[in-house]
Length: 388
Image (cartoon, rainbow, N blue to C red; front, side, top):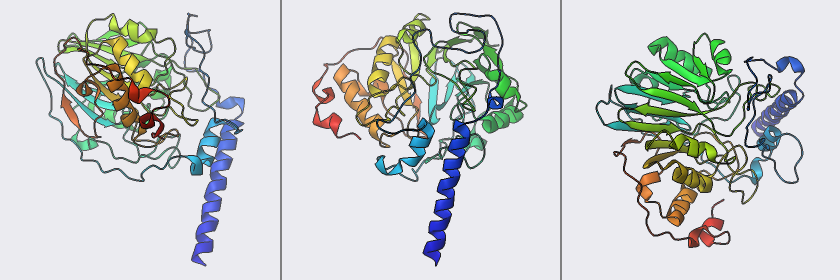
C-alpha cells in the first residue's frame, strides 16, 4: 500500500514538472519584460542585447525533441550520477584584509568572497537552497554555502553578472542589502529586476566604470552569454564580466560565459596584470563527449582564458554546487587537471578549491611555463575518455 502511494506521489510530481515545463515553453507574450531602454549600440538593437562575436546557439541533446529544460529534467537516467549531498566545512573569514594582502574564499558555484584593499567583495551571491523562479523550483544545491551567511563580514561591493537564477538570487541580494547596504554593480537592465526586490543597484554598459571611495575601480566588461528570467524575456538585460582595479592588484570575474571569439579575455588583460581571476569550468556538457557549448566554457577553454588573461592565480568556479548539465560531479576539476598539465601550467596556479576553502592569493608574478604534456588531452586518450 505504502509503495503504491509513493509511486502515485512520484507520478504526480513528475507530471507537475512536465506541466511547468510546458507552461514555460508556451508562455504567452505577457511574460516578456522590458528591463532597459536606451541608445542603439553594437550590442543593443533598441529591444534586445546580443553578442557582437556571434549569436548563442542553445545547448541541445542529440535525437531528443522539446526544449532544453524539459529534456534536462526528463533525462535523469542517462546522466552520470551526482551525490545528493557534499560535506562542506564552512569558513569564517576575517573582518577585513588590508595592505597588499588578498584573500579569496569559494562559497560555491559562482559566489566568491574576495577580500583586498580593505574591501569585502561578493560575486554573484546565492545562499538560497534552489536556483529558480520560486520556492521549490529549480536545481537544488548539493553543497551548503562555504560561509554561513551570519559569518559573512560586512560586504562593501556585490557584483551581479546577469539575471539567470543561479547568478542573480534576489532573496540573497535582499538579505545583503537589509544587513549591509552594499554597492551592487551589474550591467544594463538588471537593475530593473533587482529593484523589484526593493534593492537599489548601479547598472553599467560594457566599458562602464565605477570608482569606489578608497580609489578602487570596478569596470563592467564584455563576455559571451545570454539572459532571461522567464523565457520570453530573452536578452532584454545585458550580461557581463568585471575587472576590479585595487591597490592590492587587479581582479577578474568572468561571470557566466561561453567562448565566443575569446577577445573579451584579451580586452580584460589590457587593464594591466591580473593577480586573481575567477573562471567558470562547469555546466558544459549536454551531449556525450562535449567539451563546451556556446553558453558555457569547459575546462579546456578555461585554460585558454587563463592564458589570454595572463593571470598569475585563478579559481575555477561554476561547478560542484547546482547540477545544470550532464557531466559527472567531479569531471570539471579532473578535466581541468589534465588540461593544465597539457598546457604546462603549474597546478597551484589554477587549482580547484573545496567549497569553503580560502586561499591567500600570492602577489602577482609573470606566469612561468612548465614542460607541457599533450598526451592526456588527446581526444582518444584513456584519461580523457574516462571522464563522463
